[in-house]
Image (cartoon, rainbow, N blue to C red):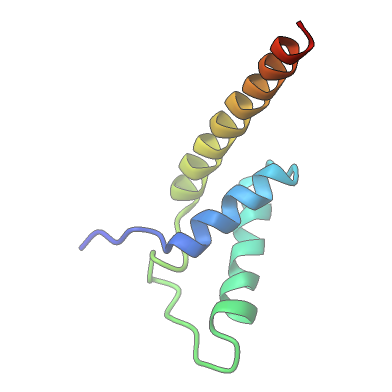
Length: 87
């Protein structure tokens, strides 16, 4: 059965990319800590085979790419808006 990555992990992934993290292994490390220390603090975390909370490197790479594209367009849009305001 295919599971979607938890929305909170996707959001965290986007935040990490925005902060300049660009290595899959580093994002994976941050996400594992996030799941253990924030999402399931004081509880038993889910099994590591649960892709909803422990995405594969391919899943992480795909979300990193989406975040990069989103932020790239966001920066360009802001620059264009600033130019129009100055004109």
